[in-house]
Image 1 (cartoon, rainbow, N blue to C red):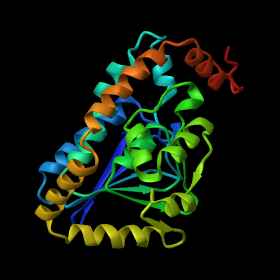
Image 2 (cartoon, one colour; image 1 turned 180 degrees about the vertical axis):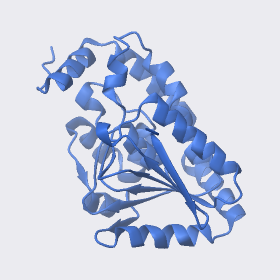
Image 3 (cartoon, rainbow, N blue to C red; image 1 turned 90 degrees about the horizontal axis):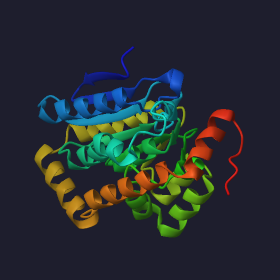
Length: 256
């Protein structure tokens, strides 16, 4: 089964994360498929706007922990990030065409970082966001350490990192994480926004995004690099190993 579904209609390319049996969690195949699809979309003159969403009722649970566990602690989290989420986050931010996250359900961890990297976010009223990383004794990655405080402030970002409390769609809208909310009219809200983007001035959109990046996110690449260094340290820690065991045993971790 393909891990990423794509559909191009009226200048809008919809990319649908497609691992519903794993809560659309990212494995290496799906991450690289998304990277490839975005690279092709950048070069395709027919594509004027990109939508990233999830198949089914979940956006994405983030990184598939099962994939990481199979390496038996041998994997370098820094090297993993350098091949997967770091280039993906930079790719989204550097893409000259608008990228919209249509958050149809739960969105956690690395998937939260991907949505934050998108230019605009539309959420179903039933959707929610979870920072997620502290739940397995890791620091944020996928740009969350920079992008989330930029949107909601440092105090709120640290609170929701520490507690892993879900951020409801309504709260996300009030705080500016989400641009538009939709319930029964969710698809119509998406269609209206991306339709307007697809009809907009392509070059001005690209240069405007470049200006925003330079003004607001000039240190994004450095932040991603720092996240990788911290993940590499924590990925080998006793706390992380205990948190992963607890995750699979469906219990609360016991930290020393």
